[in-house]
Every structure is written in C-alpha cells, then in structure tokens.
Length: 136
Image 1 (cartoon, rainbow, N blue to C red):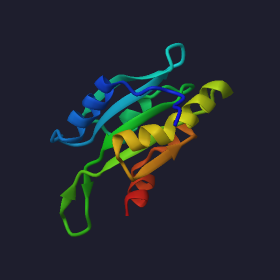
Image 2: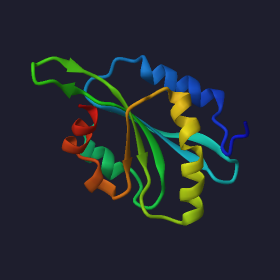
Image 3: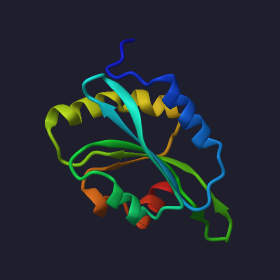
C-alpha cells in the first residue's frame, strides 16, 4: 500500500512516549505535514493546557493533527485520561486540506487512537461540551 505522507520513526517514538506519560491536566502533542518533504513533523507539546488555550495555539488557516490526553471527570467522581485524535482542519488552501485528509487514516492507525474529533470551524468546534459528548 502506498502512503501519501511518511510518518518518521522519530515521530512514532515521540507519540508512544506521550501516550505512556502521566500528565497533570490536559496534554497535547501537535503534528503537521511538511508539504515539501511529504513527512509528518511534531510541532508542539503542551502540558496542563485548557481546550480554549489549545484552540488559541492552533493555526487558523493550516490543518494539524492533535493527540490529546484529556482529563475527564466522570459523573461518579472518577477521573480518566482518554486519548483523542483531533483532526484540526480549518478553511485553508484546498491542496493542503486534501493532503491532510489523505494522510489522516494512516496517522490514526499509527497513533492507535479510536476516538477522534474533526474540527473545521476553529475554536468554536473545540469545546468541553463537544469533546465530552464525543467521549460519552
């Protein structure tokens, strides 16, 4: 099977380390596609970040994949930290969105995350209520 965009082993190792690290609060690892090299690159890591702050940090006109460790408080008081793949796909040039969409499935398999959230409308699409509805 041919892949449009390569996922370097270094990035896979970084994601694996992120998965198994205990985070205080929400944590996020942000990945972008380098259009010239056709590889995925880690852009940023955030620890103890709110969803609102994360949405502000993400670009308004460039797609990203975000691996989010979300601090979820259940109705019975338990806490868990499920991993969520956020497909950040705001309005931008069509070729970039097409490239991003074509690599999404490969990235989802590489990070081994079942829960995903597609955000196309910027910060308005990345809220606590939307995310928790997806997780329930």
